[in-house]
Image 1 (cartoon, rainbow over the protein chains, first blue to last red):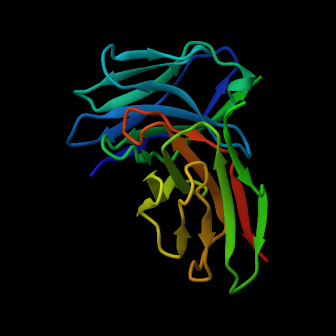
Image 2: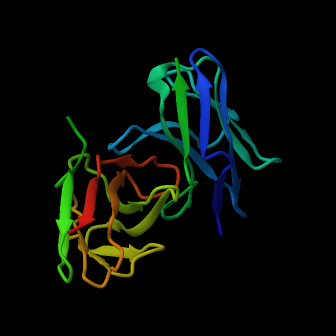
Length: 113
Length: 114
């Protein structure tokens, strides 16, 4: 069975500082990995995805994540955060044949001025 | 604009009452999903449907029911058998219902008990 663990429930950081949100997964088969972001009282928005190919994937707003098969990790990073990045971030792995998403517990990123 | 519409945004249920949450998409997606979100627990899958007139139970289907009579619609009924229904419910869809297709989410329905 697949599972996802997000190692930090809350990450406080000052504006313009770098941040890393950690995600580890467990799977016996090839995986597709996703990061989603959720702003208060809204649905989830896709931030970035790893399907195959380059292990480093980037989003349009400066986030990046690196797929590390040996460490079964998919950590999310940003070199300089903004107040507007304050949100909850979810890491997820999908089942290849159904598209079902298995989510981590979420990490709340709190960016302070 | 294409997207997923969930209604209502807020819903209140009385004891012993069934309530239905609406989910409509105009993305022409084949697959649709229902998730339940509780604080600190991430999202858990209730039901999913990869094609019209077919659906499958997810991890926490007890106390819920769905139908998929039209491609664009996937309503979720929270029955009186669901003893702890207070949660944020999210509907999602994807093009083909396979793992390499990202899911698109609606803005959710928050259900509370009166």
